[in-house]
Every structure is written in C-alpha cells, then in structure tokens.
Length: 328
Image (cartoon, rainbow, N blue to C red; front, side):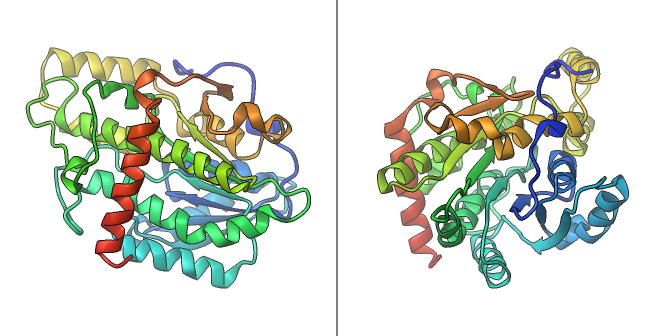
C-alpha cells in the first residue's frame, strides 16, 4: 500500500460508460495502461494514443488479457508522437477521420526523467512532450470535443495528468521567449536537474489547464478541464531514473522512500479515472471546473505557485506564437 492510497473511490464506482469515446495518451504503459483497463471495463471505447516504439499493439493485447469483465469496452491504437507538434496534429486529425465524437481526452503521457535534449524546434524534450505536444493534440481535437459537448446530456472532460512536483518550482517564472521553456537547472543539487525540469514541465501543465478552462468558460463551452496527481508511482520511468542516480546518502534515502511508499500504476490511475468519469464532477461542475484531483478522488487546493493567471495567459500566448512560427 502506498503513501497516497486510501479507501474511498475506486474505478468500480464509475458508471456504465458504454457509448463513450475516450483517448488516453501514453496508454501503452504505466498509469496510462491502467487507466485504459479501468475505463474499458466500464464499457468505453478507449483509444491508446502512443508511439509505435512503445509497442501499443502488445499493450492492447495485455489490456485485453487483463480482462474487461462484463463490460463491452473496446481498445484501439492511435499512433501519436508528442515530441513533434506536427505529428501530434496529424494524429488528432486521423482520430477525427475515424470518430464523430470524443467524450473524454486524458493527457497522461509524460517523460519523467530525460537528458537535456532539444529534438524538435529548439524546445527541450520534457517540455515538448509533457506540455506543448499535448497542447497541439488537444487544440486540434477541439472541434470534435465541442461538437460532443453541444449534444444533449453530454459530459465532455479534458483531464491533464500533472504532479505535486509542480510545487518544487519556487522561483519567479516568465514567458517572454521560447528560452523560457528551456530552463536547464544545471546548478541544481536537489532536486536533481532532470527532476527539476520534469517538475517545471508539470507546472506548465497546471498553467495550461487553468487557462484552457478560463477560455472555454468565456466561450460558454460546457467542457470541464481537470488536472490530477497520480501519487508517487513505482513506474518503469521511475525505476530507470533511480538506476541513473549516483550512489550517495540522498540517493539511498530516495530509493528507500520510493520502495516504501510508492503505489502501483493500477492505484495511481484512480485519481485520473475519477476526474475522467465520476458522476459527481458533472453534478457539481462549478465546484470541479478547473480543479485538481489527488488520490483516490479528492478535490484539492493548489499552492500559490500554480495560481498565477498572468503567467498562465502569458505562457498560452507564447505557445501560440511559437506554434505559428513553426507552421502548426
């Protein structure tokens, strides 16, 4: 049992999702894999949006092998590479050629720890995958999301998986140029530079979700945007990061804490499953709109670092300029 797991909500509490169409990015592994199983078991048609190198077809077979129970759920692969905004856009367009509706979009894929690399368009990979790629994917899907939201009795949600790690960013942030997306933190001792860059990317996710909700509200679009914290997860990404750390007292302590308190991905998916489909979210939209859900399904106040509407708007506008410059 992990630090963040407690009795309360479980995915078995979700209603019948038959007829719902859901996308889970990063659904081939970790928390995303567990989410796909949880939602498909309730009858949803779930698209596993993942790169071909993530072996999504094998993952889908494992998901079916995990058992969908008495549900009539279906699992489908959607090729997606968030590292390149152009590819992310094409993936969303491909989905819209296949489907007429989209009830829930779950932006779950993430790079946890990676080298400081700028693979595409001068933006470091952790920011491109965790934030900008999802931004492009979501905005391209917006027509089908809005169309579904306009239907009677619809319940359309966008769920962005973040992390309590966003609160590790304690310095002032600004978004004047794309270099503000490329903070390296090379002088950080603790958290380590790679971990701090990950935390920074998750702060960007928090800003994005709050500004997206504000804009949808301004348009009068009844889509609910939520962010979630899965908890400390004993995932493959965390295992690789731990293996990369240099021996020392701090590393030993981190290994102990993860082994002692981290939860399995199945339980780590609970907060996001709640955000995606729990009925109380739609029953009380004013309460949950723009909310942050912690395990297992608790609406939680965010810290002041994420409550910065000026920074959120500034980041949004910088992202739009960047995407315009690269023709996306």
